[in-house]
Amino acid sequence: MSTETVVADKGAPLVEMHDISIAFGGIKAVDHASIDLHPGEVVGLLGHNGAGKSTLIKVLSGAYKRDSGTIRIDGKDADISNPRDAKAFGIETIYQTLALADNVDATANLYLGRELRTRWGTLDDIAMEAECRKVMGRLNPNFRRFKEPVKSLSGGQRQSVAIARAIHFNARILIMDEPTAALGPQETAQVGELIKQLKAQGIGIFLISHDIHDVFDLADRLTVMKNGRVVGTAHVKDVTKDEVLGMIILGKVPPGATPGPGAIA
Image 1: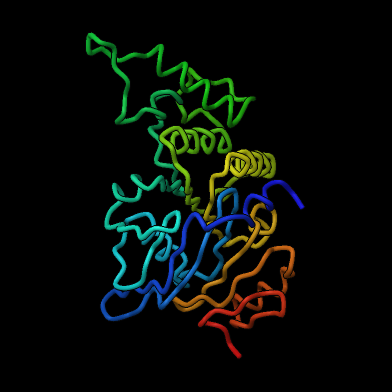
Image 2 (image 1 turned 30 degrees about the horizontal axis):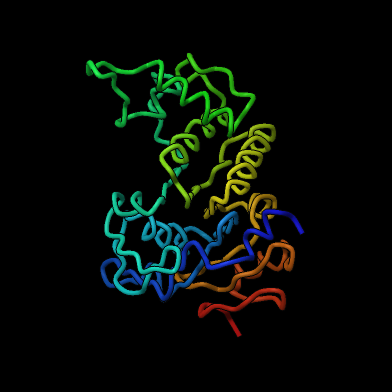
């Protein structure tokens, strides 16, 4: 058993979303869904487009307000009505687009909107670059291109900058939306290394993906959604890729998984 799994299996969940429902125009996008996440754990969320996985996680990130259900962080009820509330609980989202400012460097992106200033009110470039080097060194020791605009960086390096920005401002819960989409094999491996670093620091990660291989490579557990409902949850080691495909397509839960309300008997 790995160190990360030991961390993930002990203690209270970092996040508990229980019985979450949200409807748009009378159509339930998420229907009584429950999911949890432990420190140092990656939980993959799988399902077709429209399955409800992104909507469920947007409730946690504060992008959507739930109609019903509860969210608990560290075992305490959490009122999350907007992204600012989510950030106050240490929840950060890294979208597929990364939301980086392409024309400036890693340091400027790290502090975008939260710049450090000297006592004379000018930008404290030296302090910001020193902090950027420190956090990037912890996350991606091979990163060297601090002075270049991020548009010139590789996809994996851009992911490093986006992740560094999230964890530098005390993220404990990270939502990663399709983190390896459009990346080559080498960059995908680099993102995998970043995720291992985050797990080792006790950060919990929700990984939204269409790619079963991604989830099997990166996640400890997976949850499958279909038609807004949770089909089932399983430890990755307890199910096969074919069984997970059966959950996604048919809603059929294999013996190694715990059924949810969306499971087909």
